[in-house]
Length: 260
Ligand code: COA
Image (cartoon, rainbow, N blue to C red):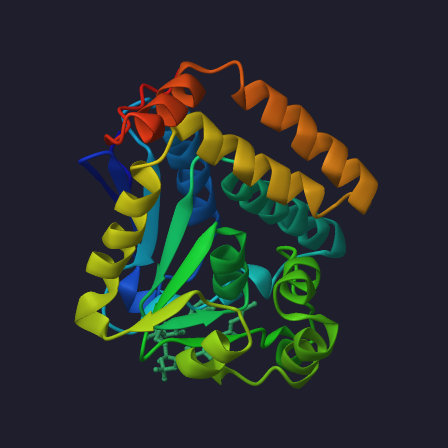
């Protein structure tokens, strides 16, 4: 499907989504959000896609936040709707059933940082900068940044970022656990592909259930999370991939997973 604000391609089981408004530092306007939503629904139902890599066009930005020219004129009701719509899209990314790797190639500010946080994993180029500058604009993070950031880096660090609005470097983001890896700019997509291939070598349903256990388990009590884990573990035991994976180990050969 052709998009006006996204580039999309598929290669070797990986979907590559690029937000393509480099002249506006890939700011997330309504059209970008709608097209991302449609693109992700396509990926959800596309059996050929095992992992998605999300990045921004150009050399400067992953995404410099929600589009401020749209935000500036919003009524309170529209502001709430914008926030809810963004939250739904980011939830859809988190719960896509397939890993989404954010390749953060520059600024990831405001909604851009929130978008990266909704992804399963985050790899950053060494020029990347992360931040939640909303309070400098008289607003607060509205795409679940106040919820995901403390879950990722702890409440104290999240509050520092959200209340000062000051950006941090890729190295600092790595130090506090906001990103999984920092690499040189030219290594960013290859590093994401290496990560994707490691995941793709594993049993697809097990990968999916593991993500469900972590994502939903994080929102439950420990006892409920353990019950969910045991249930999904049991479900894994019904799969052909479980039989293949365990048999291949015992036969000292690589497993050939079918995703069934
Ligand atoms: N929404 C809309 N447009 C944006 C934008 C955003 N969030 N961020 C950048 N842009 C636009 C700029 O208005 C500018 O457009 P123009 O050339 O038509 O004037 C273009 O992108 C380039 O940005 P510019 O500010 O000139 O680049 P810079 O290198 O000097 O600064 C930033 C980069 C990221 C520091 C700066 O753009 C910035 O602070 N952006 C806003 C970040 C933010 O507050 N995001 C949270 C929103 S909730």
